[in-house]
Image (cartoon, rainbow, N blue to C red; front, top):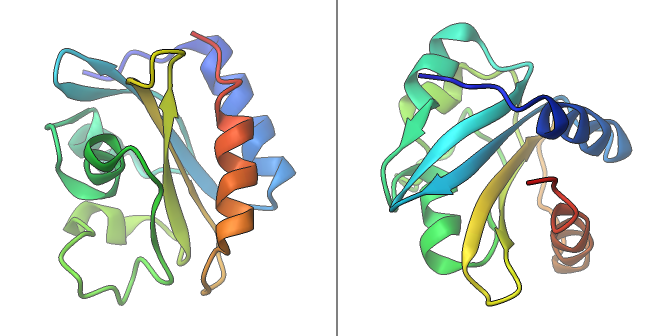
Length: 138
């Protein structure tokens, strides 16, 4: 079940606007899994599917396990197996999942952001977004 966190929702909407993106999510780690706490421009059917992300599944789960960003140039055409079918229902192409680490280096959340354009996110862009993602409210 999706329990929206208002502070994280406001933060996500600002984060998306700052990066000229079209959609995004915030998943907070509880136990081993990730739970959706904020979503912007995500279809209700997808929200239902990603309300809980099992450990290591999809882009968010991979970012969680790897503790590093996971990206795709195009959600619609990605054939790596990293993109779950529900993600393809989001009206976006380029996307990145960014792990948010606590002071001890453990994952506390994963921020997903997507654009309506195809393309690769540079390492410098990823690192800048990771730094900003660290400001995600609890």
